[in-house]
Image (cartoon, rainbow, N blue to C red):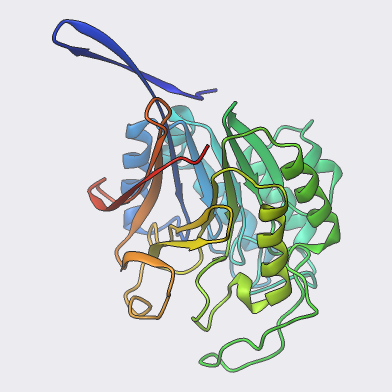
Amino acid sequence: MRIISLFIIFFLGATKLVFTQTIVFGSCHKVNDPNSDLILTNIANQSPDAFIWLGDMVYGKDGDPEHLSKRFDQLKSKSSYQNLLQSTTVYGTWDDHDYGLNNAGRDYQHKDRSRADLFGFLNVPKDNPAYQRNGAYQSYDLSPKVKLILLDNRYFKSEYAPKSYNDPYSPDYEGTILGEQQWNWLENLLKSSAAEVHLIASGIQVLSPNHRFEKWQNYPEEYKRLIELLQTYAIKNPIVLSGDRHMSELSQKDIGYTVLYDATASGMTEALTNNLSESNPYRIGQAIGVNNYGMIALDWENRSLEFSFHDVHGKTLFAYGVNLKN
């Protein structure tokens, strides 16, 4: 398993060791799109230390478990995806279209079959404790300093009240996103963590508050609970990795003891431009409306981290550096 890439730089006859950890992530990917092979191949050629699916890795027909299974099999059998599996370690969580039904939650009748398909696609080891739980949430140490937390925002989520497409969701103050079982797991994980960077993967955005689509702030008490959990245990360098939106952006919010980042990488093949002008008071820079993937590069020697987004050819579209908090 690739954990840390070691680069040796020769400068004026001297040898300098620089430890860098690179983590790539993305969502909203259709297996038959012409850009699929292009973007998967580009990511594989970079040999990152990890690649993380943030949901909608495939698009199944709504409510059709047979079609979803075929889509997972189709993606896994592609040579470009097999090359990615050879070049890095792949992790992932789902969103609605690889869960099985648009905007679905806990009432989806085929959710256990969907989980079996997801775990099979991701090659989750049979001895992984995730198999002993309901839902698809998992956690991995990408290195001694980096913990990856894959949340499940589908299996336990309260269903939305009916609405027309153009209307926002009414805030649900009683509903849940994670469910108590997953909340308890998350708290125990965080309070015992010695990691210096915490990557929290969520299919939907945590910070962006104003758009009419799915987001954590449609469930205000769940959003509040997540922030308070980070504050209670003073979680070091918390970073949300999110998808879903068919565009990409970086958000940041001061949550008192530290800054919380939400890196949304959405549109590996399905990027759109109609969401780019929406209001997000926490956005850094501009939203991105071309097919892309996200990357985090960690420089442990200089205690720094760079967020970046790249198009299907690997061209950098946006980059933003921050110092890691002690």
